[in-house]
Length: 254
Length: 273
Image (cartoon, rainbow over all chains, first blue to last red; front, side):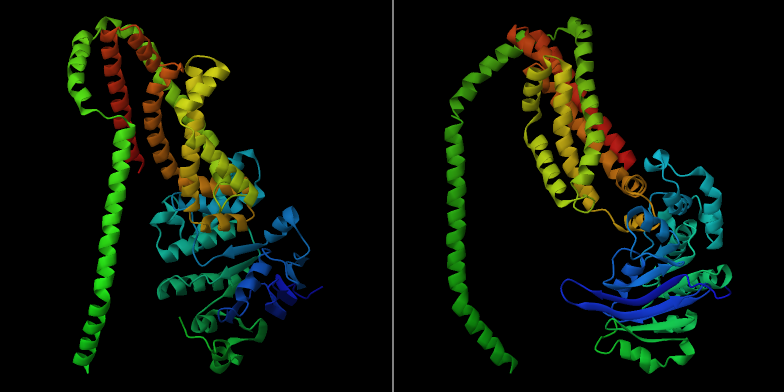
């Protein structure tokens, strides 16, 4: 077995809501270790549905999702939670607990593997602080470790939230519009970090982006989603501006 | 063009305005009449007699003259009941917070595990809160007998209602992002609660608790009137025995306790915020 196993694999994914709306149809793709793939698509194209299914929050009507080789669509409860640990999540907002220190926020990312009375009542696993510091160092924030999370700037907060996702020790990252609420400079910073995590640490990164130019510059592969169907999936060089524009036809840029 | 439309507008408004104004005036007079009637019936029902106020002055004077000077010699005997009053409030506030926090989580629509649970707990909180603590004290005196424990239980139940509602609102106003983020890392329900919910609501929780402690000390002063211990019970006894100098001392002590609690609560709340 020399073939590299994809860390995120989506096969023939379909989703029809009880309202009858077909949100996704026959979507298939895979993200390899070391790859940063970007999903582009207008509002209502099925991006959010796709993200929810990959994150294990919604069950698809057809198809399957494999995280590090395990199909999570048939899992539930504890088993799902454990398989999900291979996947770190980054949201549009940093979602830090503002009153706690940055390092405490990062160590919170390890709670899933330390389920006991102590952590259930607000304790943080002491043995994880070293690991938490390394995660913070990795995103370049170690000197802010003991500050309150509320003192971080938007870009720093988002990087701290990535450190929290890393503390979980995932092999893949799912980033849902990670730079949508950041200024351009901070957005570049966060994108550089995501790219580095893919290139240097061999993680599979799947990001939803709204900015085609960022997607072009940082993505290894662009996945265009239109009306629940994958319209294109190729390296940025092979995707024309026209193809990207076609995703947003009938939509005005916000 | 513009002058034409202005004329049209004016003609239009002159046609409509008087009707609106007349209707508005009638409505305003109607509301005033109704408010006046409500006030008149209230004066009638409470049997207000201004002349009684005037004759009452001499009665008040008599009472005060018989109460002066306050019976300071009795002060040491009243210290224990005063401590009881304060401790009833401390006990009640502490256990009310401990019990209201889980109730509030069940009664906030964003954290409740299920709709029916939400409605049941909300109803429970409404009952705790809407029945006054004096009535709870009456019930508990019957259940556990005369004494401060009945008062402490009454304060606990009533405060649970107050705190439960306020805390549920604080939780409902909370940013859900950190909770979702922690849940996504694989943290369990209780971990999400203690690591994301508690730190976010802690400042509000402390402020509300201190305020409630202040309110509880005020209530616990009067709980003694129904036999639930503390300084209120001493006041009731002194009144019944016509020991007015004692009454004067007790009222002064109540004043100090209530104002002291209010000041301390306000000062601590300022620190927390």
